[in-house]
Length: 90
Image (cartoon, rainbow, N blue to C red; front, side):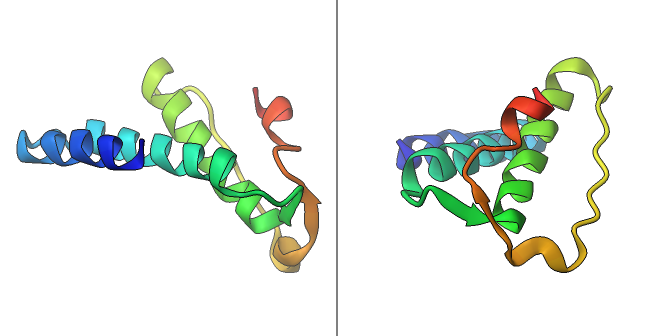
């Protein structure tokens, strides 16, 4: 799946479609996080990174109407349940 997404992303780049390339990269990162990370508890920093990618894709769809401001400070290493923030953001 990752290789297929990368082929599509590279095709978008060859066609000079940077936005589609970035969207595919964000989607690929989300998929990797969902199925590639087997831990139930993840660092808050990782959870926030995946939320930022979700917000990016959401804004591509609805013309940048959602903003997100994250101030985690030293909390990035704290372990939280995987995908705990996703329902809140949705």
